Length: 415
Image 1 (cartoon, helix red, strand yellow):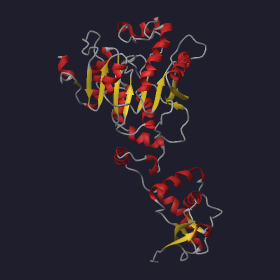
Image 2: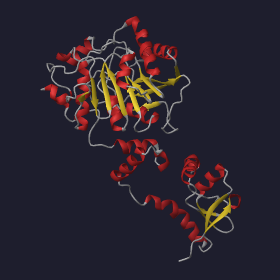
Image 3: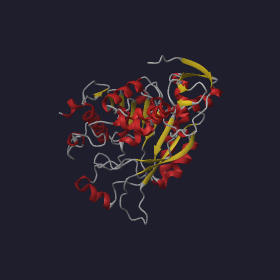
Image 4: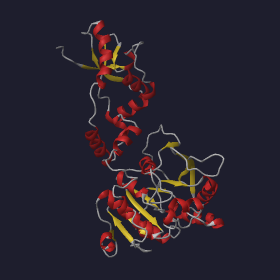
């Protein structure tokens, strides 16, 4: 076997093979990021006349980075036929083996816990999310549905002013327009990101359709502060002011298209910097009386004016997110999919960061924070939804929520 020696050769002396069958222009930036993070760890293979055998992508990245010398292994001992074959082998052999997805997920989770940029592993954002999201439990549909959504006559356990501890998360039953609610749930900390779904001012649950949908449960899923009329703008201003005051980084706010202009207006008035609107494109629409049935919901994306937001996501994402609706919304009438909230969370925060949601609803943001290893600080006005959030979290984690003041477990109060 020929002894392999590594030499450092001027980059201008290397000549790319004109008939290289690999198309790699689109991923040069990824290789640049890899070299900057790890160094030039895999030498280029070339002949002494400078013709490159393998390593064309690394060579392009090195040129873009302005490197002068790069490590090279000479292949003068190979015949012309062997060189042609080796060019193909060097690329094709990477496809021989399969990944063990379970072990791969563990490696990615370890790197995530170390706050390492997962895209430097070579996997793209969607691949990483798919692997990390792999679970035997559907976060949108708890395995113990009856435990999460009890009978109509079940007593409401939580009361206004209650603060619950759910593992690393804090859940407060209070008014999101009041600054004291944020002081209680956040203590002396600020949120790194806010992801929330405020009421849409559409009086959800009051129509004939809603009554028929819920049948005997017609009042169960009524949303508080969802029929404020002209007072809605003032309500949103107070909420935006509190969110902006208590959030260091990105802010994501879902809203009905009919009230989007109002939200954008008060968000700016409250000191927010509006960046863009994201579009959640659903897999199907709900039938209504409109000529065209709306199959999307907009999401305001911005941050406090002058603040530095933290971006952790891939740079090749569009502003339209194709994410399926939950199969059922029995926990809350406007229940969002966990994947929707989790995409916002993972794009704009790191593991261990604080995620604020002042409109808890069914607890979807808290579930997304639990799944992505963030700490949620959640406010919800309606005590019955506080109970729903606790039951949903307990059903998924098999852990116990504890009352912050009395140290009593939620389940103890249910008996």
